[in-house]
Each structure stands twice: as structure tokens, then as C-alpha cells.
Length: 204
Length: 158
Image (cartoon, each protein chain N blue to C red):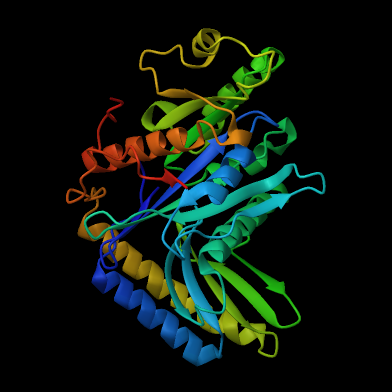
């Protein structure tokens, strides 16, 4: 539910990083916060509502104002959700008003079941908000590719991107900032295409 | 995609007028109109003193969490909440299904006064949102002047 303010020429967009626990959602935001190139004052504080052991309790939040395009200020609000199964109500709250989703999957073989469960949970939670995943721009990020026990990308594609309309997917090692900006730029691109065209986003 | 109505200058002006009047009536420090998704729509008052973008995100999360608690105790809604601090108090009141009013004021002031004046203000703000909605009920986002042909480096890494 992006907000457009014609008076001040502002567009505000909400992107939610979703995925299983310990998959790297918060790391993505930390890397964006630490490495994004912005004009002074265009990057807000990274706010983390986390437990004492640094697990996300409610959400992480990072506001960034991107470059101005033809006089329009585009403000992005990046959120993460807590990955643990017990925090489902919290995930529903964070999803409210979502415009685009980055699904951060953990590439380790033993995490495949959790990836699929989390993806199914995303679809279910969107339904409670009367939203359909097919109508929302989203991208997949296969994280932790630098670990030794990772599943082949093809296998992860089969599990998570085996649909009529395949969405863009990226491999990443978020803690090294590899793949982080590629993912963010793609979801941004899909979102803006959707807003302009109000039709099927172009993935090309 | 469900969306708030597009807001034009007239709407924003009206919101700012309402917030200004509320601050005058109550002596509050800052007033904000925010969306339940966490977006800041309009604000008035001591903007430099607070990080309003983050306050909007957190206040909406806290309000929505309270709304979920309301459902658990068989209430339809807690339509207002407030947090008491030593220096400041934050009062949040629902405007309509999409938006909320947030008022931050000195702990020396009476919450009753803020509540008293906030209620009619939310009604008038809701009415203006309705006007915006009826202006173009099916209106989506008119971003035709944006050129999104190439956003590949929208965010650049340092």
C-alpha cells in the first residue's frame, strides 16, 4: 500500500524481507545500511527490535531515500520479520501495507524444509491480509552460498520458484554483501514497473 | 493493490491545518498522521527534535500489536493507546481503517485535554481522506512521469 503524495512529490514504498529464522534477513539490512551510497541525510537509522541474543523480536526497520527521479522523491522502508515459527502474529503485523517482498532462503541443505514452510507461511499470511503473492512483486535470494553444505541453485529453484511465472532469484552471501544490492535493485525495479504500469511487472 | 487515495495539495494543506490547530488547542509538541503500514503522511510541530519516520514505523507497529491484543480479549478494537514517559507522552488514536493520529506532548500536560481535542480532529481528517477517496475512487498511482526503464543501479554500493 504505497503512499504517493502529489503535493510533495513523494512516493513511499514498503519492502519486507521474509524467510526462515537465521536465514540472513537482518544481515541484508545491515549491509544495505553500511554500504549504500546516498546523499547526506537520505539514510535513516537502522532500528532493530531484537532479543538480547540479537534475534529479531518484532522487526528491523531501515528507511532510505533513493535518488530523485524527475522530481519525485522515492522513500523506501525496508523491514524484516522475525523468522521463528512462534512469531507468526508479528509477521502478519509487519506485512501490513507491504508493496514488495524479498524472500531470503537459507541455502544449507538441512534448511530446505524450513525454507518451504516459511514460503508457505508467507502465502498464508498474505491471504489473511486479502493479498495474493501473485499480485505482489517479489524476488528470491538464496543466501549463505559461501557455506560448504549448500543445495544446488537448481534444486532451490525447483522448491521455491517452480511456478507458472518464475520470479528473479539471486545467490548471495549477505554477510560479505554479495548479492545484497542486486536483490534490492531488482525488487525496486519490479515495484516501480508495477506502480507505473499497474499491470504485470516486467522481469526482463 | 489496495492503496490510500492519492493525496493532492489540498489534502495535505487540510491535514496540516488540522494538526496545527490541534497543537494550538492542546499545547502538544508534535502531531503526525501515519498509515497503519508505518508510513508518515503528514506532520506538524517540532520535526527536528524527533526522527518522525522511525516514530511512524514503530508507533504503527505498537498500535497494531495492541489491536491484536484487543481481539484476544474479545474487544473489537483499542481505538486509542498512550505511552507515559517522564518527559513526554505519546497518544495514538485511530482515524479510519488506514490511518492513525499520533500526538507527542509534554508530560506536564493533561492527557485528557489531548484526548478531548484529538477526537474531533480525527473525524475531520477522516472526512478529508474520504474526500480524497471520492475524488478518484479507482485511482491508483499516477507515476507516469517516472522513467523506470533503467533502475538497475537505483541503490549503489559504496
